[in-house]
Amino acid sequence: MALDQMLLFCAASLVLIFTPGPDIIYVMTRGAAQGRGAALAAAAGFSLGNVVHTAAAIAGVSALIASSAWAFSAVKFAGAAYLAYLGLRLFMSKAGPLGGGTDSAKQTVAVFRQSILANMLNPKVAIFFLAFFPQFVREGGLHPSMQMAVLGTTFIALTMICFSLVGLTAGSLSDWLHARLAVGGRINKIAGGVLVGLGLSLAWSERT
Image (cartoon, rainbow, N blue to C red):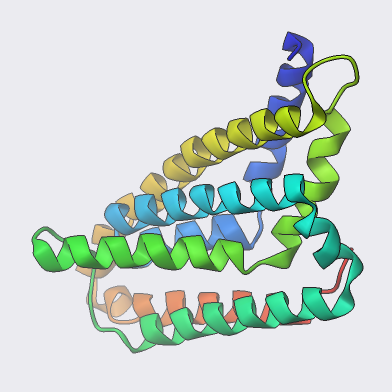
């Protein structure tokens, strides 16, 4: 693929990645509530969830979701319910930042898996991939599906790097927040409320 093609794609991707939205807010919320380990797990989960969206865009599944109101609504409400469920669990949790040990490792893996599923169940991400990537596919080069795969892999790598930086920044505030009883006692409830809010926002979203 041409250098100017990739540079333009990377520049556009970085702007979109750092634009405030449910995904980056989710990573920041996990970091602030549960620390850097959870933030990195969430960043990795959301990034790798895009592998499914890339494959779906190439296979045409995203086109089905975009064109079918029923399919879009089914995925949307499943994703909204899952985000609300995660938010309620975090709201009820009394745990602070994830520390070391076996339990911490299990919780980190759980956050990673939850983040992958939360990303996969967002139909707006699927539609975004279908609308965004083809704009950078050029004739006369690699097969369009190969170009989509390269663009998807690049986007996933950029998302991993950017979300990890955002997550680490939010995670660095976790110990400080939990060290102060006035804030630490409420941080999980605030974070849980944010996730529930993201779920409600997804439930009310419409196809664009």
